[in-house]
Image (cartoon, rainbow, N blue to C red; front, side):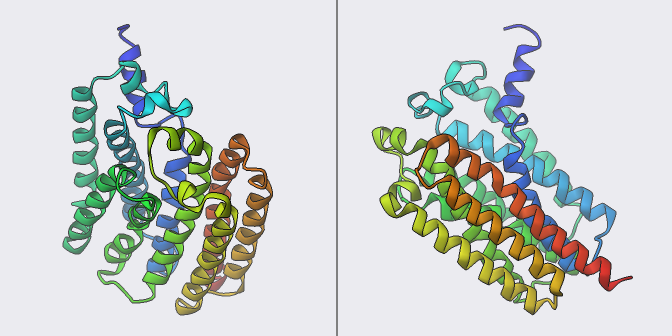
Length: 289
């Protein structure tokens, strides 16, 4: 292999060229950091969690590709992944995974004991998710639990405690994750049915749009309840209204279940996370003026 091809293949394995997953993991992390800090968090914590998000998302992608290496060749969207084409070996993928996890653990060691303990649970969830699609039609729920775990970790890092209200934020984000990952699963549904991979898109069938709408509404309700519990002001609720408008747009995109438009709806979820974050950040900015 050409000397520059191997590093490029390893980067492809981490989805470095596809930042959507990192953004979807980052926005809820920033929501939690801002709320837990009562405004702008410490620069150190912001750096730890931002870099940690990138590392853990990359590690999650590597675990996923190792787990799915015998399935990805049968799915149109994943046929060119490095472990399928042979550009990266399983041994090399495992070595990369170890490096990513060691770097992420090094970051979390810079916080406190409580956060380090929670990071073990986050790691177990991240490593369990890729295998769930073999045993349950609800792997998206496990992904939601994993993608939301930075929320309690942000609170323990910033406050050293887990206030009960954070679980409203956690559950809201979990349901939102299930909604957008169902949109993602709709892209591969036909191939998944042939291979025997399970997902919420397969489970919901012709009721997929309805279930996504219910999940989106429930997520917004829980996030509104979290806003009330944390005394967030009107500008935060404007952010939620903005997210609701984006969710309506998603329903329009997926109306015919066209795979390309379902994928477009999935990608657009980053805008919903960003709008909610802007609402939180502006609330504390206005409060501190």
